[in-house]
Length: 165
Ligand code: THU
Image (cartoon, rainbow, N blue to C red):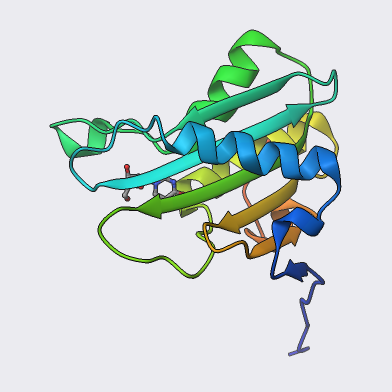
């Protein structure tokens, strides 16, 4: 048996205002979107803002439901809206932020597993790496250079083509 290794680099800053203006803009838009979340059940407000390869910026926030599983995360609201309105346009960068009025959140909030799978789908489709910026209300930010760092060994469309009949 051979032991393999998977490692990756990511960027961290204590102040997202040190990011370049286009990235800062996405983070601010994500915070604004989080403020409009519909999350009466968890009181957890998540915002996402993404930039497409045509420069269009789309935002989304979490939408909860009295039937809990029917709700949707901010990232998927934004990704699905982007794909529905601008099919074929690759996502260049996605910013995700979260906060709650119930407690102080000092750390960034990473996308959930289901959102990672959806991000993997669009990264594969667009054939470009989606940069992911996670920022927190106290200013911290992490930047990943592609979805594979969040979801290594992801399942994607090519595996369906490889299936033998
Ligand atoms: N949530 C997101 O919007 N994105 C994530 O990646 C994690 C969780 C939402 C779902 C739910 O409305 C609330 O946060 C608490 O789980």
